[in-house]
Length: 116
Image (cartoon, rainbow, N blue to C red; front, side, top):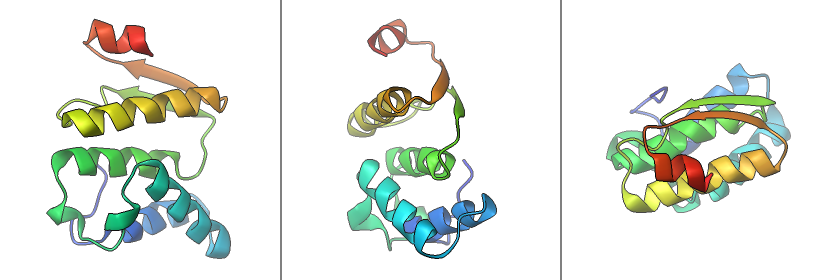
């Protein structure tokens, strides 16, 4: 996980967005968009160390899509996630693919791969 536990979800996203060249209004808008996308907008100000493992997993993936990369390499992103987070993570993968992002996704779960 590429998250800072002593920062909030919003601060983590702002940090990684800034590292990828996003600034100002564009960064703030994109942070809000991905928080909504992963279902953590109500937890934006909470410290990551207070999150469940599934919430952390979703936030970690959100950091990876914040800057809209053309290619995503995801190695078993849903491992260890609770059922609710797993559903949301898989929907994120589908959304990225529908948006034209090239997604390389590895998993040991055949039914998960078939569903994607």
